[in-house]
Length: 455
Image 1 (spheres, rainbow, N blue to C red):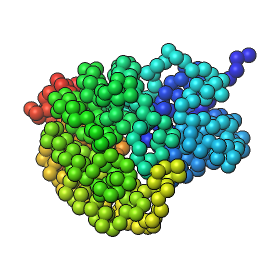
Image 2: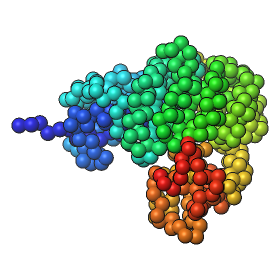
Image 3: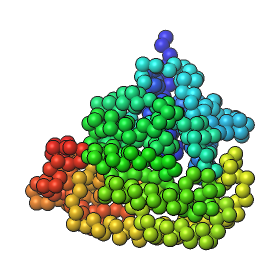
């Protein structure tokens, strides 16, 4: 008798890079005729893809593992498999503390994990993934790991050094995504700007962008650029290629020279400010997102005030903050974690309050403008979309509440582009109505689209 194939629920935690890993696993699992279920109640095997970046993420991952073990003890699961960053970093500790997990795997053990489940790695599936995002956008990981020596970061411990995915492999995966109907391609890596240096002896992100631009995506978005040794040649490509979004996520982490030096960021305050000016001058209208870490060891009140001044003067379009997490085995772990947790949170809240005012001001300037909006979802008669200046889940949404005469909002379709006039704004959301007919500036659309409504 043929063995019943396992029913697997994949629980993905952490960042979009983890999501891509889960999508690759699911494609391989399906090729092995395993059954993937979206309901844990219907599964007999739980795969937890963990995050181990900071303390909160680690605790969330542990909670999910313990929940799986509890279900197994009650007879509701046959197996619990753990993979991902937490498992890579703390496998021996986890095996001792939570021994009821059937197997722990690291971040690069897909073949072994499939074998544990009774399958095998299918080499002919290179580039294949089971995309789990909405069908119109997908993440594309162009490299793995990181060679940067940041003192606070444990990523190299979990993901290893930087490994460029060769251009031809990236293009194969991109073409497969395009064939599946993906319109927005979101490039991700721990450091996009290092791309190519280890394989080709030079940074190749500009060339990769040009090659990807020719594939035919309506939008191509860049996340996680590293400011030190930034390859400014990509700015010309961003400026000239219409389907590359005028958007860049570039975490600066801090601005004080003393803190940047201790963080081992490889860049000074002066050079950071110069780079931001260069980016904005070379790509007019670009929206910049950044991330800051506050409460770093020995961060003084003066250095925090320097951050506040920097945020107020630079006026990033999008900004996120993390309270510093003291991570063992990182360089910064040898420093005293001197800033109390409550003070870290106070600093985070103060910066985010300032950013809220900046965002409110910038968004109100958008009222009256018309943008090409990609609809992500429709809920109870309201559509939620984004402009090219916003990444999914972390940035502004355009909330469509109405339409010009002659068009019904109910006829909108998720995954399509529509011209929307901004009618109101809040700090982190825009409100708009669909414009019919297309406004003249939008007849071409982003990425050379001849008619946005035709999508």
